[in-house]
Image (cartoon, rainbow, N blue to C red):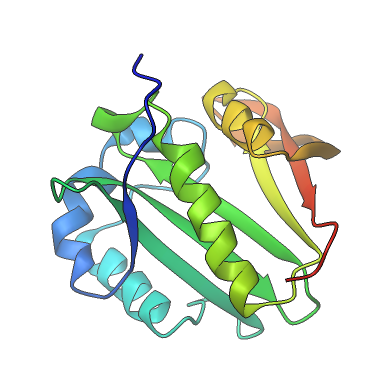
Length: 176
């Protein structure tokens, strides 16, 4: 595995990204540890339309920041999102596309997303919900400095069985 510094940039998601990213975001590998179903292209377009407006399609109280991570060669690597609720609770989620997994990209683009969100919002902490079986995502959030905050026992039904949801928390020592 190449450990050289990763150069990529984040681009705010727009509705137009849905078509470009659909082949990546419809890969079943990405949903291995999620309860979510693979979205249709129409559903993805709708979600990205809301994301472009920084609004959640299913929660009026959330500001939804969503970016696509892109390499200098114009290759799409993954997506990252941060939801910020009116009660100041914030949560990060990310997906690294199958061809780019296990190369260190997720830590890099998540770190960039966190920095962008902190420039705009006075975040005290950021949370990440990770299925206990998803060791790769657990490693990413732990490398970013998140610490295990809570365990919701048998909260998720993944791979045909109940499993724990791990809630990680990254606390910011100084406001932005």
